[in-house]
Image 1 (cartoon, helix red, strand yellow):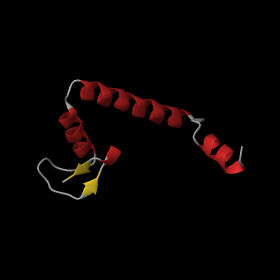
Image 2: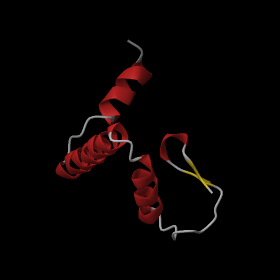
Image 3: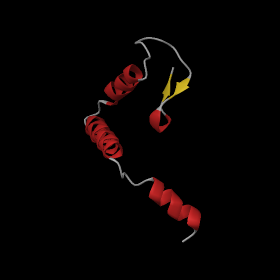
Length: 72
């Protein structure tokens, strides 16, 4: 294994309490998003992500969001 691969893997470990909490919160959002997608409610995910990023409803923007979803 190359040293840079090892350093990269070590940097991804959640060693502090704050890192573990962030990772758990991200995993929770992912699970909720997958559940909504399976139910065919993807628009709710888009609206929630827009609100989390501070984009008002109906506003136009050229921002690219998570997973390659373009908000315009």
